[in-house]
Length: 377
Image 1 (cartoon, one colour):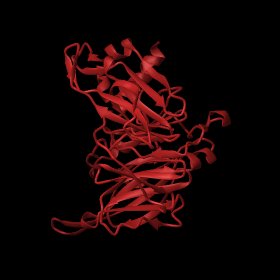
Image 2 (cartoon, rainbow, N blue to C red):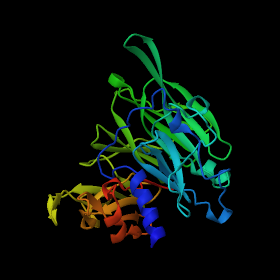
Image 3 (spheres, helix red, strand yellow):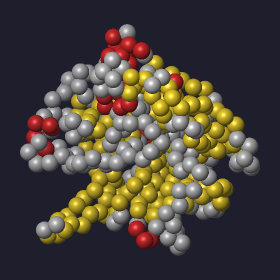
């Protein structure tokens, strides 16, 4: 029981808020924070997973924000908001505090990830080829000061190999802010906000070659929300659902919808949330969601698949992480908490309990409102 509680507390402490709302990155570390990058760790080398422990490679992986975390096999990778660095835990043998993913640095200037902070994902293809040691892709902003109060920025995507401890630039000089990143099979897709020119969606190999751009003569705001069956599903103006082939050909319009996030597609069905009326649970009043599915042939024929969920994380493959409203409450410190975390697999229709613990709920000073596993790979 102590090990379960310890693991749950780690998940609760290091991962960000789970909801249908978007998230924002915080401030970057500043000069004079050398002690935050001491490189102290319980490991002399990064552990290599045995072959049988390497997870299956899903087709679709979505990036998460720096108040969220990613699980890959036995690794939990997250942005440590206190120490202002990317850190990791091993779920099978959790440490009192996480170790930095770059663990040899003695000062910020020796850390190749110093001043690097942005949305990130674990490349499951490269990680599997790396004996199960994560290869992490990170969107990074490069800002150049032009004068007093003036600067110009461009964006890049970095690849960091936890096994070799090496960083390389996959793509550089992206002129607009990259708002989303996802992998579908062996391709990387980036969505950048190009202002009055709408959105620019890039497709490229994970080594930075063969960069392609989706044409956007209408200068629309677009957002890729899912990929399955050789198709990319994206929204225009947050409400109109389209799809196209992975090479951007054969564009099809599907439906005007009311929800713009947490959409999934499987076997001819669209999975989507709908907001419910606010309800009181104990002494806490919250809005819940139902999660439905409907055939693309007739999206009015919806079928309930999940009831009264508080929020859901970004889908990873066919898996949707979520929390139940019935688990909401206040711990002995008066903080709003959640007792459990669950995974719904649209492929099988099954719900898996990651954890559900009254003891951890009551002993968690950080509270379960900070508990989320957004990326499950």
